[in-house]
Length: 293
Image (tube, rainbow, N blue to C red):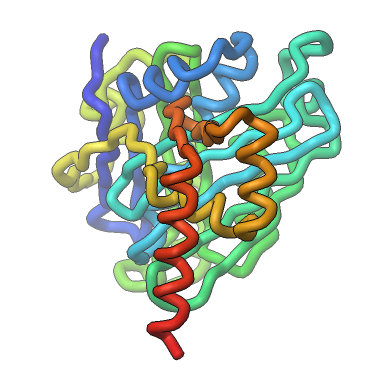
């Protein structure tokens, strides 16, 4: 079954619990199309993309959410970015000669940094140990051990489509009794655990919710679009060269026969800078610095 790239919120009318369902196809395929990843990396990167979108819906912010996992294993780096309006990009670094399949084989002793970088306000980062059987297990453990609202993830990706389901407890409103709230939370999660990976991957949102929660009073909100979008640009690439300093950049230019290539790791776009363009960049940066004094 084909899905549009969307994330869709749902709310339990008689409980303090919200949910989110994400479906990624074209955006996921665009991320994968930039690199020839092995199947286990494709799947893990898809799960991380779905997780990033789900996490972005739990936070009120205007900016960027970054998930960056690192390990000493075959997959040394996974990095996914999701903006507050659900534009995603992602990349992986791996050693194909020692590939595994399970998370603990791909990223042994791994950690996942969750960074919220708002356009205004303070940057926040949390660290997740990748010590669970799956990425979803690791994220579930992080929220269980933190002081944040109880949150549970279910993630699935097969190299073609990525799907995710999130349940999150809300502050007490409809249910004030703590025991009742806890019982409801556990009940809704037990039902969610009956959903198979195949069902999550193949069923549309309405069917998933009907399959799990046909006895619950649910409100399903309008879906929001998710898209692949890379934030690289000639300006950002130029700024990276300016950060080297004029002298070092000119030396680099000579070493590369009069033309520097700056490649975006996320989308493989290549930006070229010759001596004339490089001098223009440094002159403009110098003029800007003077204007600030």
